Length: 584
Image (cartoon, rainbow, N blue to C red; front, side):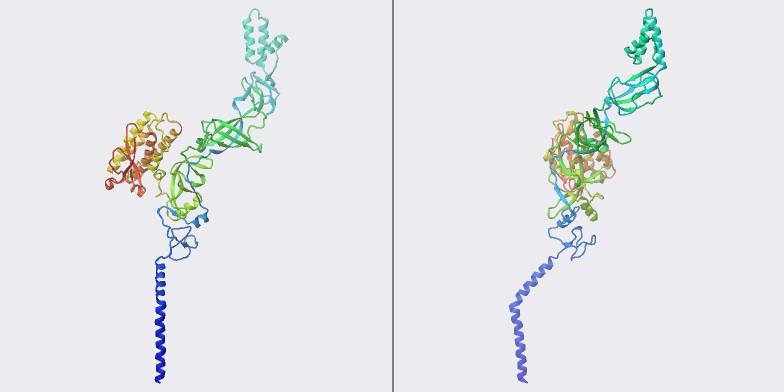
């Protein structure tokens, strides 16, 4: 019994010793594994949707919006702009979203036009009768017939002409005693376009002719027949419309939205459906200054030679207008596919992130003319910025689902004027027309500046009524600025800035101080660019900037003193801001 107990003790001791030895040899590595595992738990993986990055989950699953599988969110995916839409590379490939940098690229102006061939009005003639009477016979009785000058067109029976001939014969008999009467009778026949040869034949025959032929006054083709046999006609009534078809007009329709894109001197390449495989070229030499009230179109005219008479009046043509020039060196162009239209606004999506982690934010832009497949950007973008050029609707849809500023919800979106950095604009010196403007124009801008500075001071003081009145005064003074002498690009720049300033002058006429200050952001930046482009006389103003204004987006304003007096916050943050530039 004792021996059995001893064996049990030996076995138990060996078991305990084995456990101790195992702990000594393997316990340290167990602790290390536990530590590493704890570290992994601390870095918990976040799962998101490639199409809806606003979705966040602590474990894999399905997107509650689109049902796609959630993917791990990389640690670098941080939303730098709360208004931007974040998309992964996978989502961009899936939606076929493509981006492109904005640059100063040249683009030829191209516009598709439709029109038709018409008769040249200058060589179209209305053949009228000079003899009153009844049409006895038509010698040219269908349209399209070729006629030559002097060719008989119709035969007219004229009782009045018979009477006039008898008067001539009677006067001829007493011509020696009453030569004046004889000459008056001759002249009466001449007034009816009766030639001297016919008069001589009447005198020689001694009989009145009852029927006279009406001859063509010009060469050409009969394009319209206006009388029938048996019709009674008076002197001057039209018989035929005759046109010379050796030269033709091609009249292209210009709708209101495209009138500013076509100029006299532009080249038109056009084709005619009935002459396939052949291209025609012409130059616009006239644009109708009047729009048709019914069709709402004007016409651009091209003159073409038609000696072979292949072009027929009424033929339809399709053409492409190409401008003589290209975009200016400072012009920015973007593809048509990059732009979303929302009535009055035009928006694009700008990538504010990186290629691997794109962040797309909506941006309002001001567009110029359409050049082929690209628009000229007047405001809203800077060279080098990256925009979406394919899949813009997809990005906008993602913004709408995420509650971000979008095409249909621009409540928090900034305007084009606010997006363009004024300091960068002034540094680039994109527009400098100071050498082209008159002193009178600069003086008027100076007077407008005085009203602006009063408006700024009213906003600094927080005076709603006074700022409202001064906003109206600013608009009134702006309307009275005389831009006489401005031409070309300078005139276009002024008109564009004037429209923008008037728009925000009207929008700023509200009795809410907050709205007045909000609108002052856009008014100020447009006015800064105007003064930088045209200059001032004997004045120096400071360009001030507050990074906290305009909902932390930053805002500029002008001041005639070096002291910072913030019009966007007033007494709340009167000294917030800095001087960033001077305009002299």
